[in-house]
Image 1 (cartoon, rainbow, N blue to C red):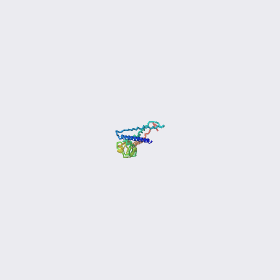
Image 2 (image 1 turned 90 degrees about the horizontal axis):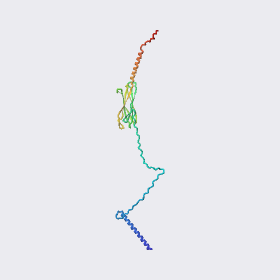
Image 3 (image 1 turned 60 degrees about the vertical axis):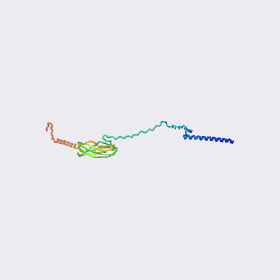
Length: 248
């Protein structure tokens, strides 16, 4: 019995020794293959990955409608409205798109002095620029033959603001009995406003002046002649009228 057990032990030792030798031989061959030795035994192990399992796509909810996704559109550019340019009035003149200058408005003012009388004259200026500035107006009046009757200089239009209109007035005295006169007004703005060069502008108007003194003298002369004729008529002798042969 002891011999049989010894035999089994010796066989087991032999099997372990053979397994150890095989393991050592396999390890040395793997090391030689790793070092690139051409004489060694190369062992290549390929690992094939398992195919990926597709993940289930979420099913659309019952309340949502299936549709093709749309790319959000860019909102259209909003164009700001352009303000309308100021309109020129019927009697206005556009001075470089900076000033609108109206025509003259004149009225004759009667005076008891036949050598006096006046023309009340006005002009309206409208600022259509973006700046505030000061201008100067000169008024004058000429007689029928171009003779200077009256003049007013240096009337200021001070600090005329954008969009503001202002009326400038002057009284031209000494018109007298000229029958008609020509009234003038010259507006002188700054040399440059908002980058625009400006020049002076002149507006003109004819004003009728009733020659009341001359008319009065003519009327008095007419009345005097009529009175004289009446007196002469009344001073004529009376001629008695006969009664057709009837005697007293």
